[in-house]
Image (cartoon, rainbow, N blue to C red; front, top):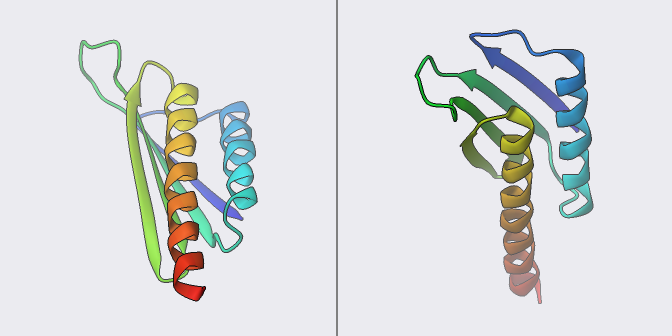
Length: 101
């Protein structure tokens, strides 16, 4: 799967990009037809400690799935997004299998 990482207001280091790639590659175990993933990492200029936003847009045939999480670290936000995307992909696969059967 092709993964595009865009970081806003900062520069993402290679370790973070590799972490994101590894996490998103696991999504293919749950849904075979993932085309690509766009990952947006943003830092808000606020006094809050939870100022890092992780947003993942997953493209599958005929639709797109979006997940957005806010937290202290990008790794935690990406982890939560991947968990949410896994649940969404499993639901979609169940619906598809129910329609085919």
